[in-house]
Structure formats: structure tokens, C-alpha cells
Image (cartoon, rainbow, N blue to C red; front, side, top):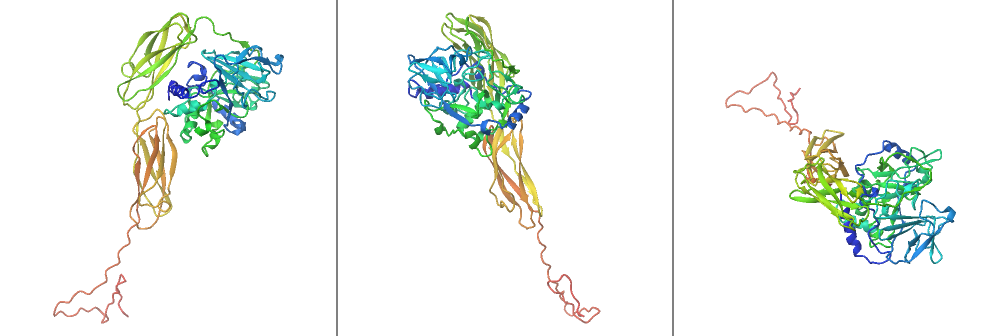
Length: 617
């Protein structure tokens, strides 16, 4: 899997080429790597009732409107320093404003003159009936208003304003237990959207993904409740108005696209989004009918149309293979929490910063060395140096052979919030699974403990060899027989291997001698080394000799194709016709010998087309 920082570096370079100024394209707002939204969940445990919850949800119609549709209405406004501001006016009234969940009425937020509320061209929105989100980023502060609408020259109506600090790693309860935000689950919105610039950047690197979870919504009638009791699960801190059966998914649920979903059938841009769903998942944020929410391309450099992404990509782009709720699994993120709607806000972080270390992934290479860079992060800058010990330890990877062991004291200068700890990785050509080791932090000075252990993944980049073997079958005189070709891997791979296979060529005639066949997207699951491709052969009684046809492999992914051509031989089993007999002839008579006589004086006639002679009369 692509390390998240690679995609983000590419995105930063892409955005640097865009125009600057209010509302211009920029890297989408993200929390630090340690945030729950940015954790790779591809190997996370499933909820014990995952299958039954998905079945319940499918029985309710799955996603809203029965399909995974995309809403492109959201806009993320980047406000420069000195941008105009507006004060929050409680809507529909101060008494109906969501307090204490949201920032106090009267809070000031930056609102550039070119700001656009969700699905609108400016600051006017029908907030009596629509959600009317306004999302503004200024530096490391994210402002998200719900049911926003301009009020006079300096006011902004809203039923909630949630302020997020993008340089902070929030606790499990986000801004507070039982506290909503501009999203019903208590989530931030902007960091869980996806935009055309980041999708484009991820298409420029092999196996690219977005590096963060994606927000999705379901109809409230499809989310879990029981006799009026509402539930939510982490990473949510609040439930909106779920009214579905208790056997369904709860507010906040994190779902993962199944690893066996044929992502490769989709366009490159769609593959980025689907891989993100496999690696980081989708989180249930609110109630509604349009499942996914993307940022509009009003402020981005690239556009959705240039990437070939439409609102119906995931149910119309690949005929016969739409993305359905049945293609997802539910992760185990903890027990259900009964919603009381009694918000208890968390205080803003105070005191010393927390120090954490993020996971790192690197492909090992076939020779020489590479470097796995682990990022250490402080939750906030400190006025004095912060230091910590970092050291490696073995997992399935072993010090000395797979990586070079290391320990060091890492110091953050005053004002710094990040540092790196590099580990040297040894390359090899062995076909093996991914291997892991750990980096642990200890002996903290000037900081409190956050996530003190990181996982280092050495990604296997050595590919097993894929081939297809020749095969033969005796054709038979009637009906059909089967010729079976073996597709073989030289060694098991840790991930799936996909390929296309088709018949063609040779002197046998498709339709008459055999049934032509094509399969696309065949999958050899991780750990398997053999697949079969069967072709029906038609029997006949024609004397024709052996006949052959070809079978070809193509579009191989996950393995190295070394022999992609096989010959299928149809062995003829029809006997050759017996030659006609030679005509009978009389033996020559010796000179002077009397003619032989039988018991009759009549001549014996041997017709050349008969097998026996006929004596007349």
C-alpha cells in the first residue's frame, strides 16, 4: 500500500502550481497522522455481527436510493490572514442553537468574500430546509457551520458552529461525549471529504490512496435503534435521529470495502477512492440518502469531469459490478453507547504536549538498502526542548537480516512539532509476505505519552512467476468433454494475483471443435498457487487428425508473467477407414501343366468389389 505521505507530497506539489488567494486550491485539511481518521484499518478486526448487520442493512435497501451515489455540493474555503469575519447568530433562535455542543453564539469566524455555502454560489442558503454547511480553514483552525446563512453585513446564522484544531489529536470522544458538531455523529466534515486534486495526485503513484477515512451517510431509518433508544459507536460522539432496527449499523460505524472487491475494473480515479475504502474505510456521519460527499471543484485545480468521476460512478461505471452495501464489512470499534443528548464538552488541550509516533511502510527492494522514516509528532509546540528515546524491536522481521537495529535519542527544538527516526531496510529477492517490526518510545522529557509504539511494515515487492501449462483431451464421438488448463504460481503471494485468460488461435475451429471462452479479472487469492481454466471440447466422428487451439494470459497484476501462452490439443480418436480389398486373381499356370479342375466344369467368378467368389449355378 502507498505510504500516505507520498500521496500528500504529490498533492502539495500539485497544489503549489495553482493560484493563491482566498478559496484557492490547497491540500485538503487533515489532522495529524495519529488521528483516528488516518489509521490504516485494512487488517482491523471485524465486528462479530458484521455479516448480520450488513444483511440487515441490505434488506433495508442498502445505501440511500439503493446505490452508492456521490454528492458534490460541499465547498472548503481557505481564508487568508486578515479575511473578513462574521459573528454567529443563533438559528432558528438562540434557544434552538445547539449548546453547549457548539461554540457560543457570538463566536467570530473568518468568512472570505468569495465564500460559498454548500450547494450555493454565495452566502445565501435556504437554511430552513437545507443543511447549508459552510466550511472555512484558516491556518490550523477549521470552522464548520451547520444551517448557515448570511445575516446582514456582519452576521452568520447557524444552528451550530464547531471549531476544530487541525494540529491536535482529539480523544475518542472528539469534542465531547454526547456532543454533536456540524455533522450529527460529532465528526469533523472537511477532513473526511475527498476532492479532485487529492484524487488526481494519488493516481500519479502506483497503488495510491487518500490516506484518510471517507464520510458517508445512510437514511436514519436504516440506522440502529431500539424502542426509541438511540446508539452510536466510536469514532462517533453523538447520534442524530436513527430509527432503524437494532440489528443494523449504528451511528459512527466504520465500514471497510472487502479486499476481494474487483477494484481493477474501475477507472484510475475511481480505483483511488475504492482503495481508500479498503485501507481507511468509510465512517457513518449523518442521516440522508446520498451516500458519499465530495468537495465541489469550485476551488480545486482539477475537476471531477477531467477525472471521469460522476455522481453515479459507483453504480454505473462498471456494468454488472456496482459498489453495494454487501461489498462492505463492519469493523469492531467498541460497544454501542446509548445516546442521552447530555453533551459534556472536552476541554481544549492544556499542559505539556503529547508525543506520538506514526507507522511507516517501505518496499524492501531487491538489493542494497532503503530507509523507513518514522514521524514523531507533538500535539502542540513547546517552548522548551522535548526529547524521547526511540528503539527498534523485532516482529516478523528480524534485526540484522531484514533491517538494521537502531536506538537513538530524538529531540524536538522549541517550536517544532515533528521529528523523524530512520531505520535502514535490507533488500532481498525472496518471495515472502510483508514483514513487520516495531519502534518504541520511552524516557520522555518535556512531553506526556501519546501513541508510543509504531509499526514498521517492510512491503514485499518480489513477485512470484505466473505461467499457464499446455493441456490435451480426447475429443470423443459426441457430446462435450473438458480440457483443463492449469495456471500456476511459482510461490504463494501475500496478496491477490489477478489476470485475464482467453482462448484463440490454432487450427481448431471455435464453435465447431471447442467453445471459445474469455474470463477477465480472475483472482488467485493470497496464499494460493493454482487456478484452473476449463474449455469445452465438442466430440465428432470425423477423421481429421489432432487439432490445437491457444489460450493466452494477459493483464496480470500481483505476479510476473513468464509464460502466458498454452496450447490445447484435441486428440482425434476416430479410426481411419479400411482400404478396399485387392481383386482376386488366378495363379499363373506352369507350362505344360494341365488345367486344375474342381468338382464342376463351371468357372468361378470373383467380382472385384466382393469379398468372396461366386460359383455360377
